[in-house]
Amino acid sequence: MTDIAALKQEKQELIDKMLEMQKQFIDYEHQNGVSGKDYWASSDGMLANYRHEYMDMANRVIDLAHEIVGSSRL
Image 1: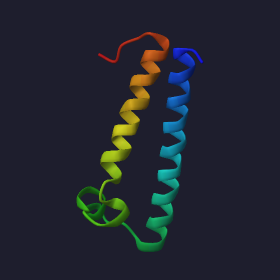
Image 2: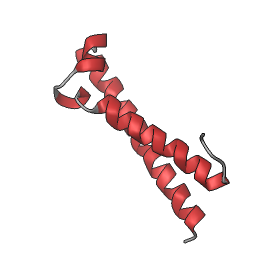
Image 3: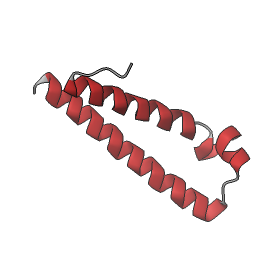
Image 4: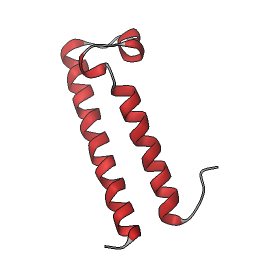
């Protein structure tokens, strides 16, 4: 596997995980409701690290996309 192929595979795996996280969040929201306070400051359950973990993955996907095409984010 080439370096580019490995980067593309990692990017796709992250996107798949992010989509699954979104599905889980929507299911959770429908069952429990989610206030702004819960979303931004929860330290319990699924929401405890959701925003941080999702943002880290999204940033990695952006970095991978730039690396794949040889551009720079900055």
